[in-house]
Length: 468
Image (tube, rainbow, N blue to C red; front, top):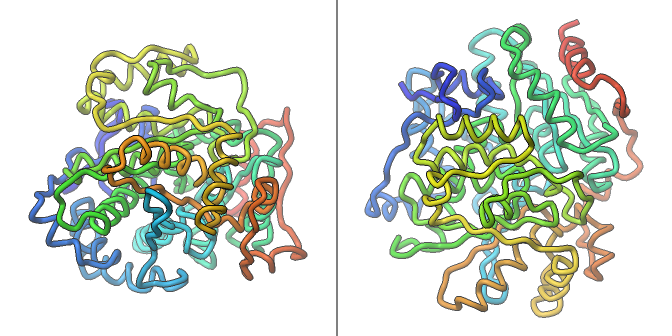
């Protein structure tokens, strides 16, 4: 049996399906596999010619016991899961731009990298709850793209209800419309007057209430959910093998980072011996850069509003998972660091974490540098990138200039068509995408949540309302 443990080491271990249908562990930590497989270079080379779905079929059984989901059931779940992508046979195109390669992870139905994992997570949850005879209630706090990708992944399901909270005025108009124009009985959307992290606080209270979670079969599609992390580990493994099929060198990925779920998936792959290095790229909301580069794990007074809005994060919750791996899986160290941070809003990392970091760099990219990267890439390559990708691109181009022999991949997180206001501000043409243009003018369906309200109560009532 493959078991999952909390990063804080207090809660009992659970099965994959229990972790899948969970948010935070009861002790406040995040689930990760108790053990990870270790893949040899020969094994990785043998997988280099596999399609993405074929790689999923060989890697996912390392995370899921066959008595929970058999190989045949898994194959059935994966069949057709990428049929709505631009090219189901090439779901992550690689493009050469200057001295770097760009992994276009946005060719799914909502134009964001979240589609790649959530297309499968929705199916996994639907399969699991269908066997149990109970409905699942999903709650998502989004800073932009997760909300619409999560909605799309369960749209029309008779076994799953979903509630999405987004920060009003802090997502693009397209991102907002992708959520609010959905009219389905299993979907509720809430427009909240605050930041995404304002929603994360009551969300965590819900998930650490064991009785409430059990009563309503509550789970989360944010990268709190360990299934997102595992699937993202597989897409980094896939990209590595596309770039380096001989498995004879390291590849550096520049990853635009908000809640750190994507790069955490990469770190899981690294811990399975896939030769990866990472640059976590952030904007002016730079807690990740300050933590990993300066050992300053501290909150600032406010979350700044930037053109790369999905990265406007002050508490990157997956940093806890990074601490777990960087400390050599020391749950006692992780628990102490996180409890001090949650109590005081700051703490210094122990040497047990800082000394182990040999593969995670950081780069802070300010707004001026973001627009400079967007313009440079357009002028030199006739290639448009979204503002979040531009943060990664700025760091990637700098790194390529300093180390021309290094293999560098920039993660392109979303289609630039989702951010027309920012693209126009940067002087870069906005690509036309029919499924985005048709959103304008459709009726919207959303509930307003104001400052001063009891957000936790609103969340609880929303969950309960689906049961009526």
